[in-house]
Length: 352
Image (cartoon, rainbow, N blue to C red; front, side, top):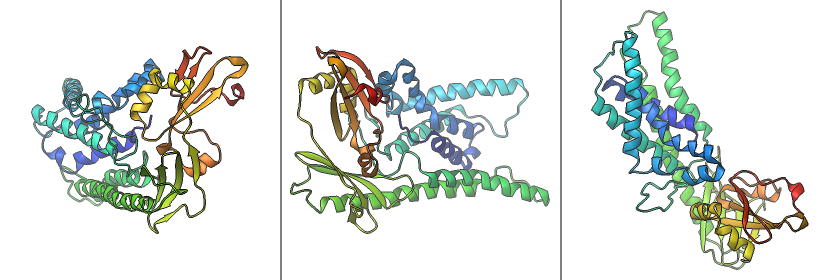
């Protein structure tokens, strides 16, 4: 369900430790790494089904209220590991400062929320008091450049250390601070550079009208690798339009790939689907929801597909590829929910 890539979270936690926090207490890096990914424990909700998982994903563990709980559970896990290591005769290089480890775990869990905020899925940091979703929309779910730099920031110093050991250089007590610090600074620089380009893309979208109508709102969503390539989504009174945006040149739809989707009329089927469990959660989360209704064979009812256009791109929409992050609700002839899921809809052979 599109968390920020978990490897990115883990590498960020490891770099935070290597950048100097590992010099404050033993077990600092272990705590930072575990807490960096601990909020995604809410993925266990998918064991109860795709709709339950969708409901709880980026829920309590991704809130400011939940962060101290995540930190406490993480430190409890680290304490268990510490006791096992003690039984095996492990002696720490530094004193174990449990209060400080809790602070580091809290910091790492808050950084997790911040990183998830940078992408388009969003977070609800102020829930349950304010259930609104917030998203920065500047970094893709997976950013290969950031991943590579974080990885090299950890591995390169170790490789250089092997060379130093071979030539007999003095081995430092803590290694890799410079590489980890560079990786974190680079990560931050990428985020702020993408924010700058994101603003340019949104400005370009706001500068024109679309098919004779003013935009009610516009958004730009990032690509995986190209910081100048954005997927623009425009909403007017009557339709949505998805089009590529080149923030470097300020051009809109340079290759004439825009896809238009008119807002469907409200029908008894769409109203019933919106009242379903999936429909309520999806519409609460989605920024640009689009519903498609299909009659099932032999009068069996209807299938209502939910999708959010912020996760669509013009080139894939025009080719009829399945939407990303789509859900569906099936209704019987009496418009009662017979099935609902955040997985891909049943095969096209069931439709007509």
